[in-house]
Amino acid sequence: MSKVVLITGGSSGIGKSVGEFLTTKGFLVYGTSRSPERYPSSKFPIVALDVTKNQTIIDAIKDVLSKEGHIDVLINNAGVGITGPIEETPEAEIRNNFETNLFGPINVIKAALPGMREHGSGLIINITSIAAYMGLPYRGIYSASKGAFELVTEAFRMELKGSNIEMTNVAPGDFATNIASSRYHAPILENSPYKKDYGNTLNLMNSHVDSGKDPLLMAKAIYKIINTPKPKIHYKVGESMQKFSIVLKRILPDKLYERLLIMYYKL
Image (tube, rainbow, N blue to C red; front, side, top):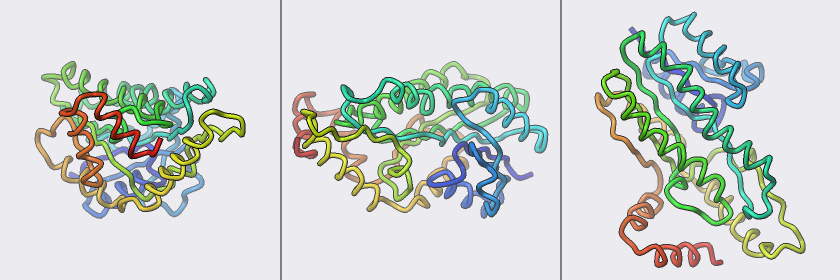
């Protein structure tokens, strides 16, 4: 029997690549989008779900369960980027980022767990970010929301001990997707003390996405995880130097690591 996979944010970017790849491997894949009618040519079904609206989460899970009877793999991929000086980022945008990147995915997990428990097994893969491992300048809110999701996963794993439900984090680096066009950018204000540094950093971040890895790399990594009986707690996928930056933070004194980031971003 083919495994049933539900991917939030499955209409574009990493989610779309993962869904298409898993479909070629024989999985029954469902993706989600706030506007599924916009994707009539998707290679797998897209159901309506907005992670910031809990009723749509409940309805989407019920929809898939009514059709397939169970969900074997949940991939929490839906998320949104945000850039800007924290001082100049509107509170509403900060809250929206946490609603999308943290509270929403938690609600998706909560909605999926009863069915997995009844089925006797399940795998939940949470897509976070390498940025979750460090507070990056002008990406502080994004780092914080994704970092919180990493910690939530660690806690969930222990709470689910003995349930035969596995959970893991996958932290991607920069991939060539449309995330830069859809994320919130705090405006570069003419009289802002951050004008020069934020402008330069924003250009650097956008160039990293433009030259990022092929999302197929993420798809292959997730396929491998699905076929691993006991997944690790954390996975990192991306450029070697991006992954090595996490190692450096672990072994270097805090202020030395901070200086390296300041030099890297030319602040």
